[in-house]
Length: 428
Image (cartoon, rainbow, N blue to C red; front, side):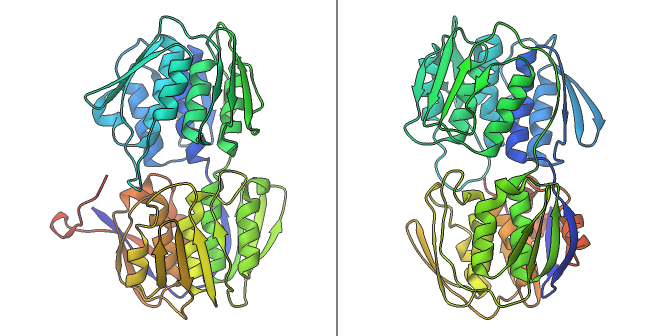
């Protein structure tokens, strides 16, 4: 068991390189099996969710070759159908992309219900609806999603709610289906565009990704390719928020600035200055933080995955700020940890009202999920004194070399081994 120990009160200065996008990688890696060929994927982040999906493919018989720490070759030429091991697939949410990928390749799939961060119900009703409309029979048996089809046939699928996961899963199942599949009210996140570009590099015919109507014309066969994953929008946003919260001058490198516009806009409103370059953004903040209101929305709105990090700024900004969560239920579990640090917050359903305080105080806190864990790091960096962050296994799911990267900016953060008997049990 390990904790992060953070001594706060330091401004941040320097440069930080952003890794490949977690949310793209966990969709693109399972999608590689659709090729039935050798696929090389570059700019893979070194995070536990990626390690798990690679371990699953390896256990299923795919040839896995690590070219370097951020490049992998996946050979699925001789991959045979089998159920995905429950003990692996139940550990994280993105394992459900194997349903779409295996349904597309083998016309059958058996994968555990999704796990991962526990901040609300993660229904897969829309995923199942999409698979069924393509012609699959889907049942949930003993915690496993079992899907099977004699053949998959393109159709029009309307997403009742904008869902990133369901949009991706239907894309994966549809690329080898017969005829045209049209996904209406599709999610528009950058990693959906990245997945579409990857599928097209393997010979698929996917058009309209990044809009709310995606059209997929099924092909008979796909082939290998070499592809580089986009930079991680949420990791970049996390370091941007940290720079604004702590003050200082940080250059966030290897990013696509357009993907960060909604985050940049709120940081500017809160008192930071943002300069965009071709593949970097510079964040400076030397004046007091000021109140602002934030509403999470599907892309291109403010990302729900940046909500907890932004809450740290609102905690110490002058005035009253209102945060509205419009995507996930129960994403305010971390607020209890902030209250222990001296924040003044009231939560009523989807709305959290922040009365800015002069300072937070370092205490022992827990990561309640991946992004809340990142928020606890930022809170520790801002706070007076020492903050210990527990349950950091959540943070390792989505952030590569977080200690090294923050330390390079002048933060005082260490990963410390603790005895199991003193450890706090993890959830989820």
